[in-house]
Amino acid sequence: MFRRKNLVFLFSLIFLPPLFSDDLPGGYKSIHLGMSLEETKDALVKDPDFGYHGDPDVSLLPGTNRELIETDAQSGHGSNFLGRCYFQFFQDELYIITININQSRMDYYSVFTTLTEKYGEPSDFDPNSATWRDDNVTMSLERPLTLKYIANETYKNTQNYSNVPLSPTEMTREMFLDEL
Image (cartoon, rainbow, N blue to C red; front, side):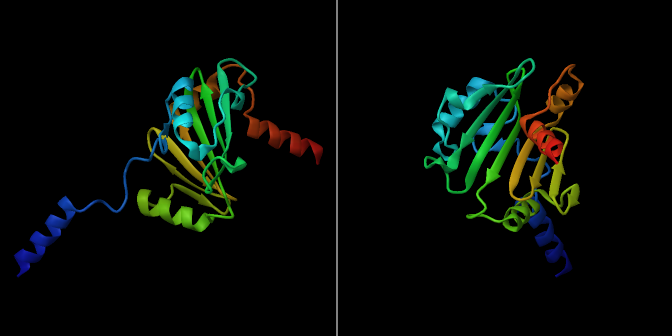
């Protein structure tokens, strides 16, 4: 009997899927960190959930080799679960994906619970965000309901790049604080 229990336990460890993955996802759906600008545009065109309208949604950020695609899924052509999404590029490589989730269709707790079940406990957790990290990707869930995927190495390189301007979010934040 004792041997049978050990055999069943060993079998379950080998053949059942793990409770969570060691590797974080490198993106959402068909959009993955590291894609080129053109690859990302092609993937967005093929996936109507993002509400991508083509080149007018692409803008050049101040600074060298930085571009941004902004989509609006709630404009009537995308997913009911997505809001505005941002895809940031550095030297033609997608390095940040920001997905704003529609709060009228989804809640923070449901997303947090799902991510925790899939990827384990977050490495950082506070009232405003939960963050998971591995060697390649940082994934954060921020309040009110934003999911971010960041390519660690490229992000680090942008921080070391001379004259790197603030991101649109950082600029908006600074403008807001200046108005106080």
